[in-house]
Image (cartoon, rainbow, N blue to C red; front, side, top):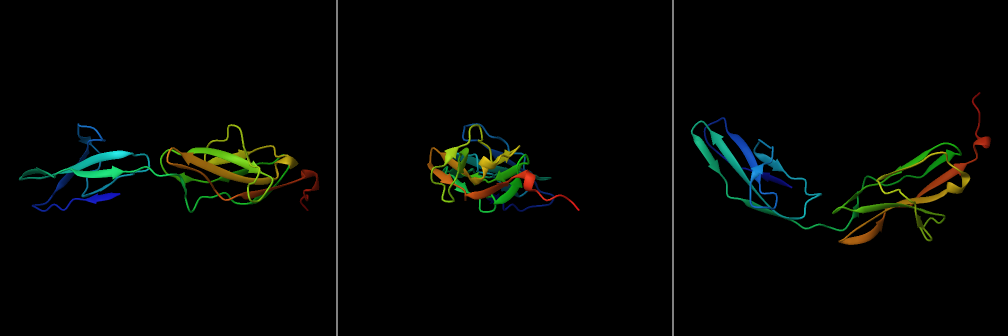
Length: 174
């Protein structure tokens, strides 16, 4: 979310943005230009912002502007989803996906079926990146990242196919 200050007066104008961080005391946001950009991905609640503009003739502070952030259920980020791949036994494979929303809880899942039926959570795999090392034939299948939070879910990324081939059948260099 971006907020612009429409100040006029003798140049140069300096800007200092302030926020209450959802409380009663204002502090400097660290942005010193006419535009404030607020990353709301980790926010929940109502926050107030104001700007102090100064020049050689004095200073003026704006009235506070309220920003209310309502957390949302997890949503898959459109450009980050796992892709199918083929690897050989003893090699590695890596998948990644990303969700937005209020503090999603993540779990990588494995299924033998393309539609994810019978999927099981992979123990300890709770980040946006899954790296499988020392692959075995039994790890062939479909992988998906599942997200949920207190506002909704579970929501799964697409199911990406991993094909693990026997390294004994791997072609050698010429």
